[in-house]
Image 1 (spheres, each protein chain N blue to C red):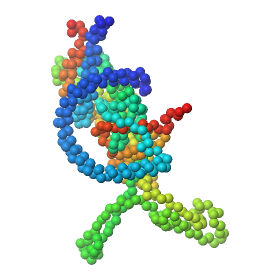
Image 2 (image 1 turned 90 degrees about the vertical axis):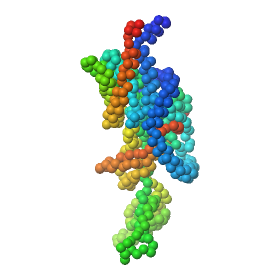
Image 3 (image 1 turned 180 degrees about the vertical axis):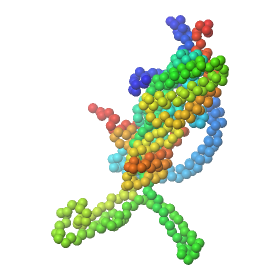
Image 4 (image 1 turned 30 degrees about the horizontal axis):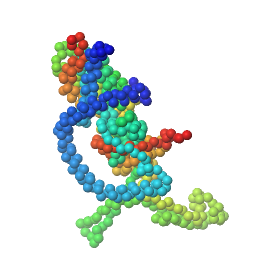
Length: 173
Length: 350
């Protein structure tokens, strides 16, 4: 029994859930209060993008889905909406990373920013598809711009965090 | 995807809330200095300006509060005497706002009261200034309130058109008007109640509540009809009957519409206001209050805000009214939830 728990705890996605909970608590507290230009910064989408940057598109998509699901649990949006969008964000970030020859810290910063901005545009589109009205307007672009810029600043430490959380258990041993 | 009302999803969200709440609380304590430092850096000037403005507002409000309270009490007594529902008769629950939505696309806040207090989805939420929104999700000890500015929010409202200001120009006493070129005049703007002055109706005297119409002489070839044998709706043929002008024609006119939120950066609007000549042009500053009704989620006469801009449209389309909300949604603390359910949703006891 204990062995199984330990195996489960060693799983990289279990670690990601714990990291996701920590980041989610930051999202709902300090980043919820700090609203530069009236925009709530989105570190959850940054975490999804960073997962893709750290471990590639496949892992990024799964990690993005898990992170999005955590975010869905505290939002009033339809369950699975953020999960679907963040999975796309993680996948796109991973694909973008694979296209860059010898990625550097600033390319990762750029890709993290771009993926976050795309996520902020996809989110209202997905909300509109599921029946929400009135949220798909020009303001979305402004939100995407602000979130993209601020997530660029945080993308390097976030990518390192995701690289650690999503390490294979064998590599740790 | 979410199936609205799914018990599994609701249970999962509720259970996650139980697990996540302590983590969030601990993080809030740890990160509070960081948040305070940020707010100090970015909002200090705004807070100073807001403080000055609020001081002025408090001084202005103190005088009018006493008379307003007296008026409200009188109105409530009058309504109760006539057997009409009043807000005072609706039970309420006070709660505190404990957080707001971290999303940029939904305007919701979280309060620290839930089903334990008798809250149900749809109940209206107010603060001291007026309505702020409605309950959209209820858990055991917390609820989610959708604010008036959320794009998904809609409510039936009444627009109370304020009377038109009348401008009278009076020459200053003793001032020659025609002989000199330096003419001075005093202009006074007085707001008068709307008075219907009907001229040309035989027997009607403006300002008199009961007017008597004169008996019209019969036309050549017509026979004289005895009093009371003619219906009152034949123009020019009525005999000596009394026309009663209802007292209260100076009451402001009301028109109903639908209030819709448009997101945090834009003011809510009122649609479907009929373009009726009787109602006249909607004036800026006209109050907006809830309309109530059997199917409305809010009782009547809750203050929502005032008209800040009127967008006229061509044809028979009525104007679109932009609304300045009475409540400041950016600074919510204590709120009151009216435990009100519309009559169409009340469960009838067997």
